[in-house]
Image (cartoon, rainbow, N blue to C red; front, side, top):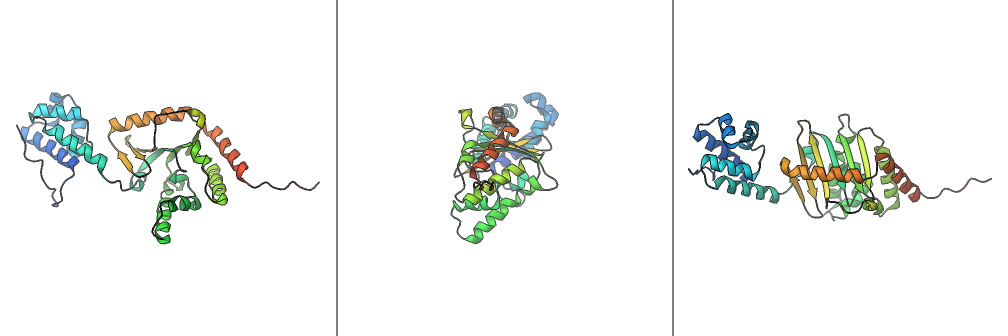
Length: 285
């Protein structure tokens, strides 16, 4: 049995993504077979709810699931090929920002290796960081700063989420160019980490090597699912499939276990701040 429904447009005339082509193909094949989700689950040994999410495009699933469905529908390797196209598309697609995801999150866990995390930055520090990307104008810079600071509403607002940050010691050793900006940033960190819904862990140099090679953000949602965002100097990648997110969650947990505790991290920040503040003259005797 083969299918001709792979090359198609959506109801609005727009070309479907590879992921939605795959999902649509699954739904069409099952409809043609006359099977219910329950019957299909019995044949391919995957849960009914899992198969339902595949057909709706809510999950891409695994290549093993695609192969199992190919066997049930007798479609050769059609579904495996569509799955691989969708997987490749997910890796190559441009990322449009985390703000829309963070709005609906109940928790964020982050690891920063090069700069203070966006959610913990002061305006002055954010401006200095964004200037390194050479914005075209001061208006563009101001818009970027305002957009970045708006993300902090989820941390500081009335409906705040729980936030945990692992900050590499290298971040805290790489000061801002302006001493006042850096003192202000350290003061802000000392203040914000006292909030009950914020946990900060410094990852000291003595921790040694670990598995996370770049910046990582884990975004947790109320229904229990988690997505991950990894970032390098030039690109970012959103990871949504549970089987791909889980190794990153494990690596994050292992790194957190080797980091300083929140209390020790606060002491670390205070020590840095004392070193940066100008020495006050001793009172006259």
